[in-house]
Length: 446
Image (cartoon, rainbow, N blue to C red; front, side, top):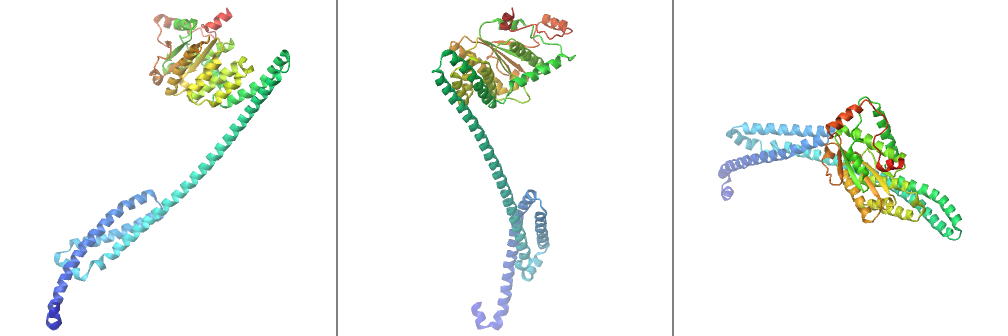
């Protein structure tokens, strides 16, 4: 056709123009369909991103950008719907009169621009959030670093003070060798009082449990409940199993098992036992429930502090500095248990009262096992110490723990009919006098 057009353009141009228009209409019809399908795919990709951007950054600027995007999408869909509703003849006509580049490209370009604007705004907001987050992280890090430095300085100051005390102790021992025995004993006694106060203050600062304050609070609550009409006492005091356990001359442990409703009676019983032991100067260590739960390491630190406060004979020897060094280096449960065993092996009789309600369930089980191991380790050292352990357990969570760590299990509310009759007769006779006293106290008073 191109060759014929060159020879006879006046005739062939008419045919060639008509055929070229027909071919162009067919190609444009295909181009319109491809343009619509491609644009709809882009819109399908843009809509989820727009919804997510509005949820993440619901600001006025973002809402306006998404609204403009939706407006252009609606306009495009209206034009596309009109094209799909047209007849084939209209499609052929519009393929010539309204090509896709003139009828749809303007809206497609606007949709792409609005989508890019929304994406850029989301990226800017994300970068802003990251900057704020990094700023807060730096502030928290700076506060943590400053706090850790203050704590390190405090610990270093305490260690420096303790080092000075140990140096003074060594100098005093060297000086003792150059004086007579009586002067040495007198000087040593005066120097120990100063060292004892400072050293115990340092150990107390490492312990988060104020056992004396907790005992006073528990006793005050017990005395208040004694005045209550609803308090009828407990059958623990008259239990033959309790008397037989206390009369034994061997180390043993007893589990006071009760329901959650009977927890106050068990706490009052433990407080009364500790009160008798303290009043009769019997060595006793205790862990009672406070407002918060203690970790097992805190419990061991409290028991060690109590043992150090009681063992006055050890403080006049260099062994005290050795035990103090072990306390500072201790990290595991076994380390603290060994220190406690070293301190208790100098006593003949020790009572340990532990309320497992003061600890979590897992720590309570570990504590019971460790206290059982304490008696075994003292026996392996061939120490003459008799350790009596009273562990209280109550509630459904505590009731599921193993009882193999105790030698005797005494359940509150599990007595015979005669025991219950005896309790009903004693309800009207509330008295501060306790019918049972520990075996060691009873012998001392007799």
